[in-house]
Length: 273
Image (cartoon, rainbow, N blue to C red; front, side):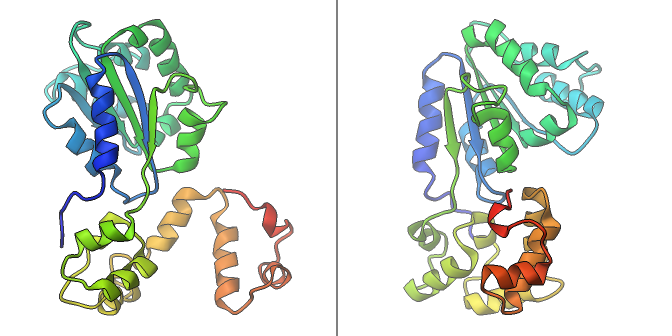
């Protein structure tokens, strides 16, 4: 197992430049699961005044209480009455630089419809002229784009920076797996890509094949259900895509063959995330 923080210097420097601006910043960080977003933001947040809050799949009231505790401390005996009050409280002392990281923002947006519009209004009215740096982070790429990045997003035109965090390049994989030679690194990139969370699971005294047998091919392996989990998280119609993958695995390679095997009524070329 390797806990090196590698190949994220550019992203960390970008965040640090935003922090050093001393003006209001609204930053968006997104990317697929397990790519290292939380590791990057926790490294960035070290030593900075403010709050780091991770949303969860929960009720609106529970999320609001949890957010209150992130701002006021675990012993806070109250919860803000609404999200407008909560976002306003995040500013703290208007003369002090503060950081607010909302990790897993899609969970908040899913539990509180319109929360992006509330944040937009608070930003326009108060926070834009403060010294607060807000970072919204999420793994559901489609929702992050709809909520914070795309033209129709509630926060469109407010964000001051964004990072779509990508998997590590081969040189980053090699840095995380120093005991692996060039051939083993290529094999690793070809099978697992550059996803840091997966790379940390590898035992470097085992070959990549041995690792995959233990982690993914074994029905009890930690990665055995990972493809299913990812498809369910990222896609609106996972059943269609499961059928498509099964059709390809069965040897169907042409569009008409795949369509017949999946009995899809919709042209596969029009399938959307």
